[in-house]
Image (tube, rainbow, N blue to C red):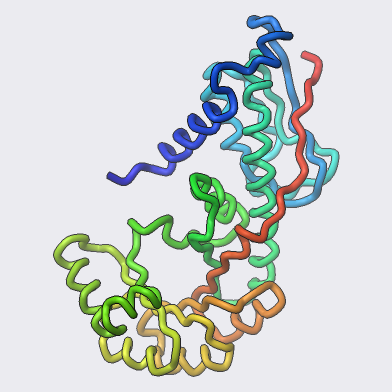
Length: 285
């Protein structure tokens, strides 16, 4: 059974709060009356692209459904130092118990969205679109990929379940690229109709074999130089979607996009992103 994105986020929130609170937030329990009401504001302390607003509201409402959450900015907005992203009015216990989870999610997501946005800006004017990868933090993928989307890029497959991607190890274990494609094609048509098939190629010769075999939806050109990608694209001739991957970074992004490849995938937009500085501060009611 495939669980929805909403269910994944709720499960993440539930598990994260349980991890943090366990048998009680004793700092709060020992000093704050259980019925005390309070207000807090999210202060922006670093410029960038804001991400995680919707998640923050979900976290507070998971703990206390009737919180008063006032969004002053939206996911995807450009944020600058000194601005306030939201106000929340709730039980003080709720605010204090949710504070760190809200900040951890929003700081990480904003860092990813900001780095992603910088890559997307470099691709303006090109046909090529930016994809993320599965190089994500375990149990946090749903929010990291949401941050990529907020930053303006396109989500690749979410996991092993929603697309067939025949990478080098699949091909080698299966006995070759042609055999791997044939087996995957048969599997899709007998067990998972509609599932897309992508195949990784490592050489121009691999590309030629894929073109002779057919039966795929996208061809990945892995660790190809821009010149090799241009050569491969002539062979593919728009018959299949194309994706460039490996050895691509911010400084050479435009060289690869100039080839006309459909997609460039980058793990760096997630695993190289730095969290941005935000803080949740008590405010007078």
